[in-house]
Image (tube, rainbow, N blue to C red):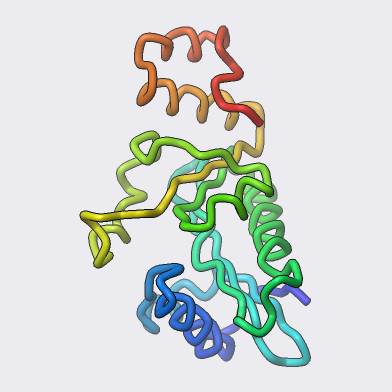
Amino acid sequence: MIRGAKIPDVPAINELITENAERGLMLFRPLGDLYEKVRQFVVWDEDGRVIGCCALEIVWRDLAEVKSLAVHRDARGRGIGARLVEAVQAEAVRLGLDRIFALTREQAFFEKRGFGVVPKESLPHKVWSDCVKCPRLHDCDEVAVCKPLTEAGRRDLALAVARVTDPASAGAVAEGELFDVFPG
């Protein structure tokens, strides 16, 4: 069952993230950071045991990041990760956000859920605050994926992508002429 994370869940969340970080699937997160941001997390609780987690971190007035998606190695392949992403997406919609994104090494997983690959440069600079701490900073293999949640989000995303990939078309995107630059 999916529920909001609680303070007693933090050690289990930390264990899930650490296990996945050690396998090179995600970044480590300091325990103190997890306690500070516990309200951003949802967890998959199975008989009182946390076997999955995911966070939604608001980046700006219209944008949030799907972060720290982790599922225990013995529970993979059961759709838990997909359901956790659905839960944070529903929260993003409830909050009135226009789009969500993730930085991932699991591109296909997110594409199956309606995310599309975008140039990293199309995301706000604030996104990169965690990257400064990453040991792979200068050899990053993560892919940026984004999903519009509203029509405004779709337009904003198309404009952000156009500014990076084809600056000459950005004006047309802003005017709504090239609304479908980003498929969705």
